[in-house]
Length: 418
Image (cartoon, rainbow, N blue to C red; front, top):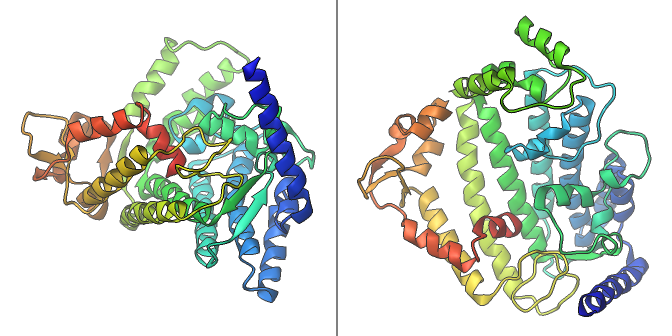
């Protein structure tokens, strides 16, 4: 009975906030809910030329530009018919929930690179827009879960194309009952501005890594597992692919799958193609740490409790799966200090081979003095040796303590709070 009362109370709270929100719909709302991002960007830019001090509109524009990068990625994957089973892929950029495309276009390696390059530009634009926000009182209430991506271009609203589906796939959100989510209004504030900027840097660092190295050899033996219409380099793979069409059940013990896995590992030997991109990763990660500190300062200054996205220890939220405490906030500051020391080369990561306690991997040198990257030899240890040295190694025990503070889910907290 108590759980039912809690559910009803939660839904009533959300409905109340939704009703109040209806009286102050921000300019960006209609474009986000319709998926008309291009027109929204034009109209908001035109508005800001006339009202340059309207930080709510600027936050709306930055949010739209960030969503536009996800929209671009999802539309690209739909266009080329990405295999829905890749939602479980390790690489987050292949995990978006995209509807099946009955008529996919052919894709090649360079196409993926262009998709990633475009996404980087869109994230840069979002960060540049958000960085111009000055007012610490800025507030942008949005029906977050109803933000729509018209992925298949049919102009129809569809739950599979709403942000709700994206967040469930990427973060496995279960805290808000599904029946309540469509009415949820989140009031994004100044701390969330900084949070979103941090995420643009984290995502760009991952995209830069993917573009810095030549992975075409890996693509040639594995891409047809991701996309149905690839430009095959090897004729026999195309023959096997055509023969397997229509089969619904695959086993990991299938000979061809096993051979593709072996070939994929073998071809995970990436030649450095654009060293400047690796160096940008270092700058992005440093900036992400800086912005995380700024975000927690902004959170600490908040005295309201208004439909929070990222809460402080005194606030409540129906969205975040984590509730910060004074203990976790203090631990996170220590983590930022340790992470920055690692990025600056003052601390080394423990080297996973040998017994020397003072031997470690220099992350700063790995990112600022980049070399070819052989994944298997790197895991083996010999491939990491160019960046292994003696020095002050970050303590494994310290990180185990951090993990305990966060109840064994430090990674989940880091993903959410950035």
